[in-house]
Image (cartoon, rainbow, N blue to C red; front, side, top):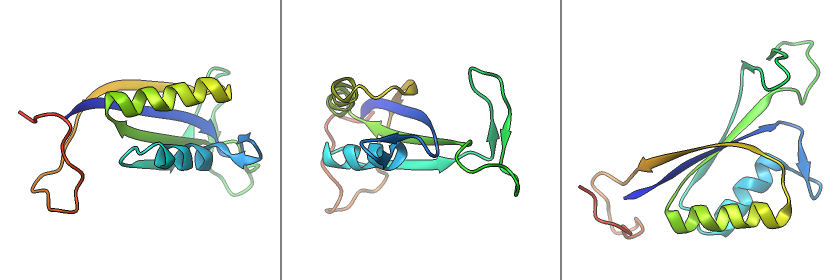
Length: 117
């Protein structure tokens, strides 16, 4: 199946409507019918301000990045982008075309939307 890999990079303490953005994104993706999403906390990194943040015992909480990713069909991806525009959520993201599927699917797997090679 052809689709896209969306990665959103947010600060772990960033909020939208009083909710942590990474939690809100996963909930919205689930509500939109995206088949799966995950959140990963960074060990270290830097962004546009070129300040290195690392997970250390004495570092202030909330400065590290959480990566939220979804692998989505074109229709699912468009629904997600439309929602983010409507909600006016300011996010940095990476988009990559992706081919995905399930090896040896069973009856509980959703149907394939497009033919795999």
